[in-house]
Amino acid sequence: MRPLGKKAQRWLLGITASLVIVVNTVIVFSRNEPNEQPTVEMIADTMVVESHVPTTLETYLTNRLDSIRGPRFSELILRHSAEQGLPPELVAGIMLHESGGQEEVVGQPFTLIRSFGESLYNKRAQGLMQIVWELWEGIYPECGTDILTAPTNICYGTRIYRLYVDREEGDYLSALRAYSGNSTGYIPRVLEHAAKIYLADFTW
Image (cartoon, rainbow, N blue to C red; front, side, top):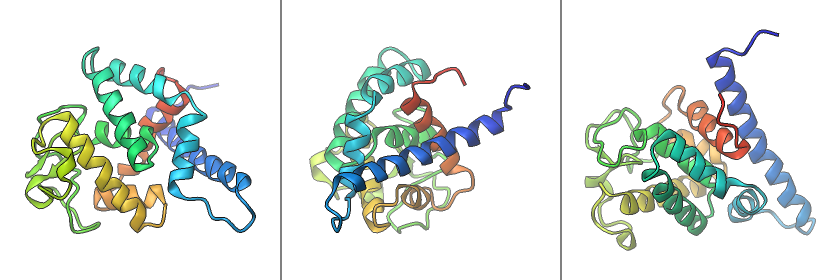
C-alpha cells in the first residue's frame, strides 16, 4: 500500500478530530436524562478526563517547540481550557497555527478580532493566539495586561474562543471558522494538531 501523502494525512487527521468531538458528544448524550441537552462544558470535560490529552499535550508541544516552552504552554492551555470548558487540544491547535508557538510574534495571517467573524489579515495581531490588543485590551482584566506574554495571551485567547463557541451554540468547528474569519484551510490545520494530540501520534 502506498503511504499517504501530506495532504491526505492532514485531511484524515481532521476527520479523526471531528469524529472525536462527535463521539464525545454522543457519550455525554447517553449519560444525561432523555430530555437533558449536553452543554459545551460537559462535552469538553469528557474529552479531557477520559483521554490522555494532559500528558500527550505536553509531549507534543515539547516536540514541536522545546523543553522550556512545551511544559509551560501546556500547563497554561490545560488550566485556561478547563476554566472555559474547552478541549485543550483545540486550543493548542489554534495557538500553533496562529503563531507557531512564538510568544512575541506580531502580525500573522490568521487574526482574531472583535467583529465576530469578519477578521482579515491584520498586522496589529499579537502573541501566541494573535489577539488584536487595541480591540480587546481590558475586556478580561483577570488575564493581565501584557499580551505578549503566554499567561495573558492564552488567557485572552481561550476566553475569546469560548465567546465564539457560545455564539455558535456549542459548535466547536463553527467557532473555529469564526475565530479565523472564514480563512480557507484554517480548520483542517487546527484539527491536524488536535488529532495528533488526542491520538498521541507524533509520527505524521
